[in-house]
Image (cartoon, rainbow, N blue to C red; front, top):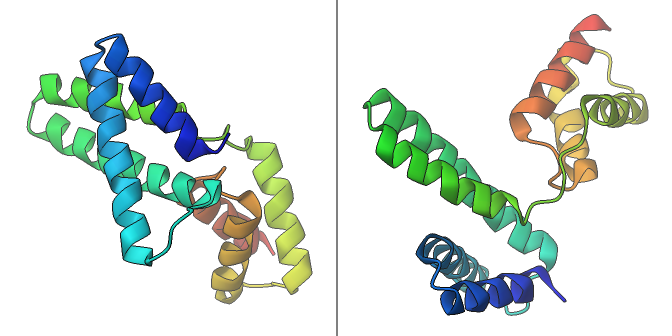
Length: 150
């Protein structure tokens, strides 16, 4: 079963259970996936493509939470957190710091990177190798940290 089919199945189950929060969150996610398919002008999104859309939606929720907390709107921030948790269930488990460090070190050796000037090459390769299992901020921090030591 593809990730898109799993989302559809969970959406139907939530509608039957009358779980409005899950229904609205998954409905929004289905819409985002459909819009991404249309923008890419192709059918049959792979699981990797769907994961990119989910990651994008989670990032939007994180940004919204930060803004709501700045505006002292704890009610809206908590709603966003619940929706973000629902979306996070579809993401693969995050890489541990040790696993990420191992990947970063492998890519640095592979490219022969020796200075922060090689940051872009290493960053792109690590993100590809991590396959959506590591956030850009964490990867960026780790790559900078290791390149500055060398």
